[in-house]
Length: 130
Image (tube, rainbow, N blue to C red; front, side, top):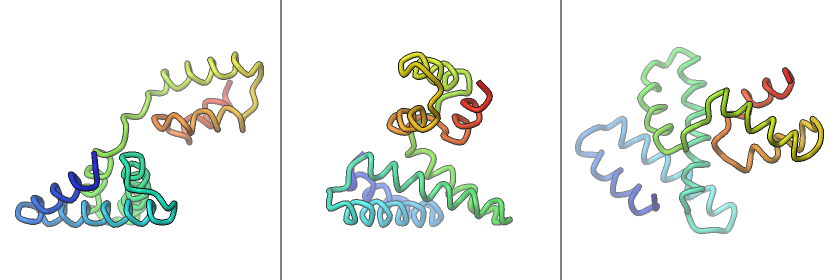
C-alpha cells in the first residue's frame, strides 16, 4: 500500500466512519514522521512500522480501560503482516539454532526481527523454553 492509497482510504472514511478516519489520519501522520526521520519516502514497510507502533499504543489504551481503542487496534492490525503461530515460530527458531550451531539468543532474535512476521515476545519465551 502506498501513502496515496492510504490517504484516499482516509478521505473516504471521513464521510462514513469518524473513528476509522481518525485512526487512518494517525497512521498517515506517523508513517510520514518515521519516513522523514529516516530521510526516506513512505513505503509499505514504513506504514507497517507506524501501524505496529500505533497498535501497541491502542493495546495499552485498551488495558487502561478505553474500550473505544478496540476499533483502532483492528484498523492498525489490518496493516500488519499476519503473525506466525507458536508452532510455526518454534519451527523457525529450531532451524535458526541448527544454522548457527547453538542457542545464541541475540543472534536468533536478530534474525527473527528481520522477518517482520514473528511475535518477538512469544519468540523470546520459546527460545528460553528450548
